[in-house]
Length: 412
Image (cartoon, rainbow, N blue to C red; front, side, top):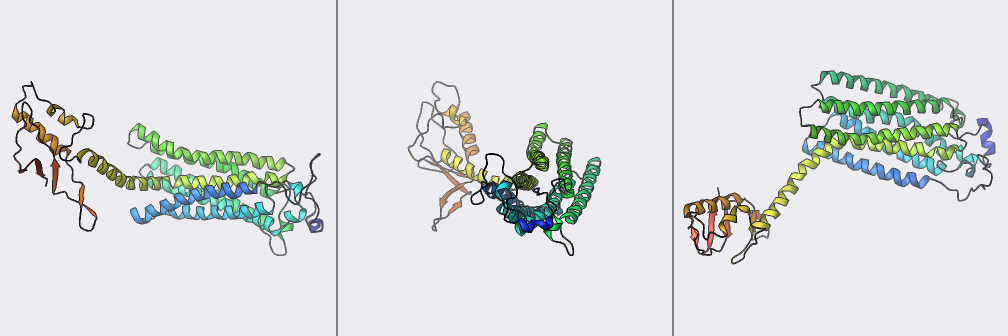
């Protein structure tokens, strides 16, 4: 909170005065002050939007593919709603003065309801939101590493300690920031940078950093014990390592918190921790959704793979009467059939080679459309048009039905 070093009861009388003395050579600007508020609007919205995309993909996977919800889905949803609330209250605080130099604000702006109530709501809701975000990881680990009894003990211990810590600190922040009977936000909220509420915030930031690294090492240890190739283990750990970005954000936020406690421009230095808390929550929730999103991508990649195979086969197999293919596009199985002059290969061997090459290349694909213009599979019969050119050692006649120069191969 910004430091005013005044009796809270006198603040309403000084509403039109500057909230701080401007440095030498700097003029106070109440009309068009410089502010970092647009950065919170846009950057915070981008990170929350990405988080919502991951959340929607997670819920879609659970609702329509696995058709089974678990407790981590509930905690993830609550954490996402809390992050949205954090973004809304952050925008209200920034509009009221956070991110603006304190000497460019009036005392009345700092003691306004938007600034005080919005700030109290942001601080009080931050800790429960962080608790649900971390519980999402603990519940997920309980599901994945259930057979590892030794690891399960560490997961349960971390979940219990994390829940207890955040409940205790949430109660403390509620006590320090929410006014009771006969109190107001002006008299309840302390503007001292070394207030008990600010101290609780610093302690919570330190605990958040430790718990983030604890979660990462739990996941890395559990995955390394799984029976799978080392390359696959490293790949999964690398994906989970994106969660370390939340650890980095937490460390940077802690640095700005400590700087704001010792600074004289409280409203301006209050902005970085606000934005970094939103980014930390959004990144953490997005990382918790990655396993479900990966399963969703794997499911639908089969459809794209089949479509790609269809076009590839259609390109290599559809050649009409009298057409020819070059050596690069022709399969290797036909390499021995291009020129048989001067060779000692017998006709039965050529017949076997031709038949094997043809049958291995044929696949049941969509080849023609019906009267309604819709394409449909014709897996029963596939016609391959190929012109037979007589060479020095002519190819044998296929035993299947032959109509002109058209080979018809029945596949069952």
